[in-house]
Image (cartoon, rainbow, N blue to C red):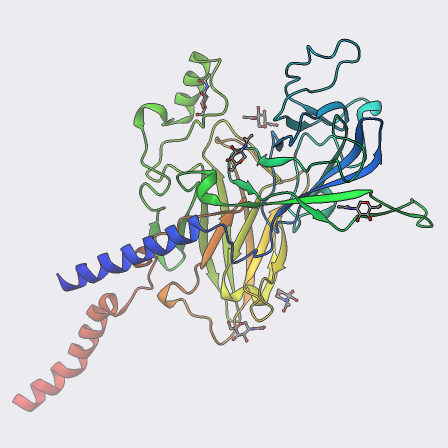
Length: 438
Ligand SMILES: *[C@@H]1O[C@H](CO)[C@@H](O)[C@H](O)[C@H]1NC(C)=O
Ligand SMILES: *[C@@H]1O[C@H](CO)[C@@H](O)[C@H](O)[C@H]1NC(C)=O
Ligand SMILES: *[C@@H]1O[C@H](CO)[C@@H](O)[C@H](O)[C@H]1NC(C)=O
Ligand SMILES: *[C@@H]1O[C@H](CO)[C@@H](O)[C@H](O)[C@H]1NC(C)=O
Ligand SMILES: *[C@@H]1O[C@H](CO)[C@@H](O)[C@H](O)[C@H]1NC(C)=O
Ligand SMILES: *[C@@H]1O[C@H](CO)[C@@H](O)[C@H](O)[C@H]1NC(C)=O
């Protein structure tokens, strides 16, 4: 009774703590991760300016996946966009008051998307045209930046008349980002390709956008399951970890999937179509403690995609475990230590190998990627108390729901050893007892 109550309290406390960490935008493993949007006014025109807008993803392990970012804002006055290079406004709006040259967009609150790869050369600018996909900074800084150029009219052409746009929004691609106000910043400097000439933007402002998992999705999107060589029991993901399943809309088996997709061919692509599971998560990460050698131990990590409607390209996995300071070998994944705190080196970033397993394919026979890794043991190594299992796991920057601590695979303990111990004792003690009696 008492222990049940205790368990309940521990569980509710854990739940509360996880809710708090979800609500707060602050990410302790990536405290400075943000997306910065920088506007550099390159030159003035008769009625406005030409600006280069740069979007930089400095988040260590959260990327912007296909179908890419959408950037929006509200003009402070009655500005229009005459033209755009490297991106486009999704809606032209009402340009009927312009009889001759028609602007690219007359909307007060334009939404801009990146051009697709292979856009015509005369529409490109440097760092554009990636379909809005940005890798995380930790994965590949050279692909974590996107840029476009726009010609703005009716803004006035001096730094006294220009008003900064307001209410920036960033979809990446869904909800999740909140952007602050645009702020005047020191003018950016640009260098010619030979590095011999430096120029400055005429005016620069920037906007910072930060991510909150709670805003992105009401329910978590990933869960962790576990197993070990020393216990045949598999610890499944927590039931309803990502919400409870609607049996009518999930897929029971591969043959079921084929008939369903054939039946309702024109489906709503943005809604997930999940395999039926107790946890209802689109992503399941499985940690298997595979072997225990003398000085080393081995783990296998498998990531499974349970959504039939989504391929995760350029996926990332972040895992916190105290033995990551002593990683000997990681197979099949790219591995980088993350050191958010200099004093601790217990977190690692993993991603796929280019054109081998950097895309986690939709649910089905190929819908998983896996890796094995070997750690060197140090004095802290133990198979007890769930030490061999990770402390935290993030997939694509979203935290995975862990199983309840009391459901972790346990070492066969004394309760199991007792019968042997007792019979051994009996074998030793019985003859003594009998001799004493005689
Ligand atoms: C505007 O330009 C003038 C002259 O170049 C400069 O002195 C001033 O600091 C600028 N103001 C802003 C807000 O950038
Ligand atoms: C801009 O955002 C502010 C604060 O969120 C809001 O009050 C205002 O209505 C928004 N303006 C427009 C034009 O959307
Ligand atoms: C598709 O699904 C999304 C999200 O589930 C929903 O907002 C949208 O209205 C749906 N569209 C159609 C055409 O059913
Ligand atoms: C995922 O990728 C595979 C292989 O490139 C493709 O056949 C499939 O249609 C894609 N699925 C989705 C939902 O985009
Ligand atoms: C962290 O651990 C990794 C893996 O053992 C090692 O390669 C790296 O140098 C360590 N970094 C620091 C800052 O200690
Ligand atoms: C790894 O960290 C543990 C403490 O968490 C420490 O005892 C051990 O010496 C460290 N190993 C290395 C190789 O830094």
